[in-house]
Image (tube, rainbow, N blue to C red; front, side, top):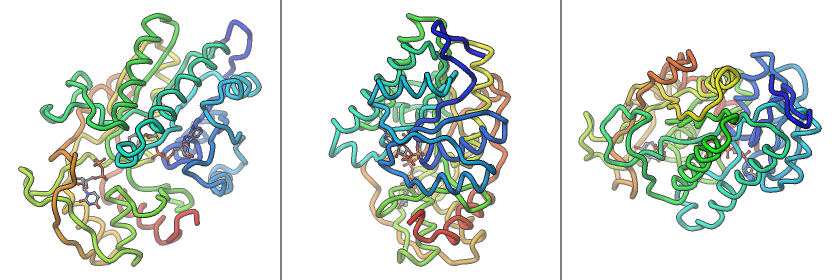
Length: 346
Ligand code: NAD
Ligand code: UDP
């Protein structure tokens, strides 16, 4: 257990962005691992109803502080009062298109917000951090599967904000070796908790494939637009590494255990290691839901790459973690969530 110079560090995990899609599933994984946690979220992209849902899943009401990670004084107080020993940092803005239109908002929330959090952590001698990074930090021209030492290079402000934070964390750990930091590079998290109580609740038209398919299946949208049928892939559609959100959540608990043994800075992919095309996932979703999903192939989406999947050896070797849930389970859980919550959290 961490023990800060000022005595503030304990064994509670601070989950920033813990009411969001991935953070809420991480809360369930922490509860299942018997870990205490406190959530900080500013509700920018989430609903307070998530707390009720988490309570139903874990059996007790999680501690929640409505606050912004950019408020350093507030963060320092939360770290102190809750005796936080480690932080899982999910809070941030994540829409690529929006980041192109509003770059300063993204640099403020994702980069400056993280900086404020880190300064509060340092002031409270909390030096264990798991950061939500992304496969988007890899340069576009790498060979597959993507190894963690592949060339980096983001192509939009969102990706660059993730890359800047990774660099910032690496510099910090190099200067202050007692820090223990894991940058987890998620591939494509999908699915939901099998209870159908928590899941992904996008506002407006979904940008991501699986939430879009889910809304077509439930009748909220007419048909899927498949962005490009002329890629150099087996069926011509884009290939990604879809990974169940609960596997991703459990990867965080495994990373935390690793950091408790080993200070340092590490970047680790969280994916399955399998590439799946748009048409393959569409067919799997049809199987899971029993509903035909109309689609039309349209122009490629600007900025998309043809294919992307993870090398997963490092997660296995360092964290003893691998993704366990298959594509059928991802689609079935997504569909169960979508049916039970056709309007998300409302
Ligand atoms: P999400 O939007 O569902 O969750 C993020 C949460 O953070 C939301 O509840 C939001 O209200 C909160 N938040 C945002 N800014 C905040 C701030 N300044 N202070 C406090 N709370 C704030 O997103 P998600 O899909 O759960 O993603 C979590 C993290 O993982 C993000 O950092 C995202 O960039 C990263 N990530 C997500 C994906 C993905 O496909 N979902 C892939 C790679 C990386
Ligand atoms: N995609 C699509 N139609 C959509 C949304 C996405 O064909 O409405 C494709 C997209 O081109 C990519 C894959 O689905 O090949 C995954 O896209 P998503 O936005 O979910 O994830 P990312 O691009 O971040 O990998």
